[in-house]
Image (cartoon, rainbow, N blue to C red; front, top):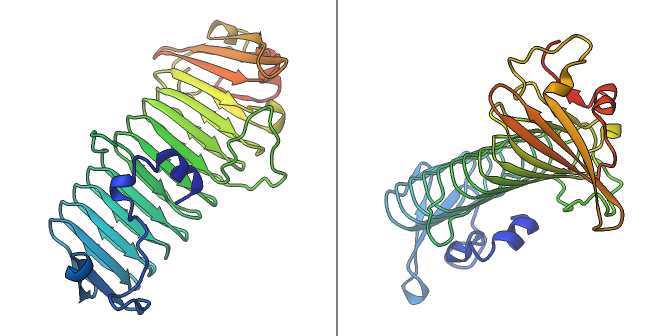
Length: 337
């Protein structure tokens, strides 16, 4: 699991902390390729049962280690600890609090409702989880791996990390933390890395309070009508798409000069804009305000009002930005006009 997820959510994951059991057999040796073990009991009462794919766990609590290629693992409701070393695993579980580790890549993970701790490696992984449990911890943490991953999450509080490029992340209603590779916790007044990878990730946000850290370039964040805080790194050409029903976004390190854009096509759908955009100011107002923190800081606030709702976008430390400069800099994506 990535360090940022561990730091932010380790206390919450304590009840299912054995999320990364070592891939060892019952005798202490390395689990051979092409085999699996179902572990029951503890200490002197610990027993191991050899299993091979397809593995059916049923309802209840299980601890499984497996090292097979294209393993098929299914389980019912319960709290499961699963460690898979082979590639191409398919793991389908019911409701419960599950801890799943799979470093092989091209895994497909599907769970029901509950608090999940899912730590994946490699590329091409797919994760679908239900709602969080809503109890004391009420959080699901997912590291989807090193690129080309897909996450579809239900409602609740999600902490999702994605490395590499070409990831697609969709979350429901809840308070979410989403980190796209790399995760430097960027701030507009801080230092940044000289390495700017192209990540081309897509994040679809739901309603709620969402926190998104963007690394790399060419990312698209689809706002979902909630209260979103988006912190960009040193990358370029990132796009924030405002939702049709409005919302509130705070964006750190947004820069028209490096090709960042705000997509207003949804929130302004149905609005008739003149070809020369002379009436755009009737729907988009902009104001700058100087603040005293961290030296001389000027934030820019845009208020966009469409037929379906209004959206407020705060560009932190963006300096003095005008509507004319956003238009001339091609920083706004607008409906046809």
